[in-house]
Length: 175
Image (cartoon, rainbow, N blue to C red):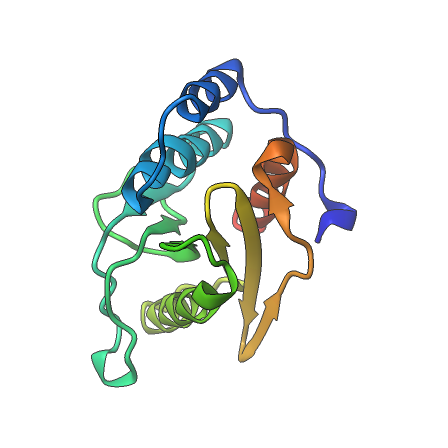
């Protein structure tokens, strides 16, 4: 993915928020979510003029019989400021132990759930994207039809403009 990624410069607010976070102990997934991931997603939503909604900690019970149920860490939905998930196009899964690879199947399941949700709602979207992150390490996925693609590139928080560029490339598909 990185060959076609245009880095997106973070605001001073985001740099400062991450700097403050780096000077605190981040020992739980909740702390990581609140101090690293959420500020990045909020900043990104602002850079895109609030064209999508961010859902955190929502139950996403699409099809219990297929095992497609449970709480999602973050879902981006292609509708601005909404109070329910309408067009999920991006699922972000946080690692609980810092191990990215072990969370890829969970993220893929959330992406399949989003795809099924969109099919049932007759939302025509080109693909569903996902990400597994420890806050510091980011891996992106794409689900198009029955094909799941896991990006070979691994992205690191110390190169935040590239992470924002990957997110922008995804969101541009839904504008």
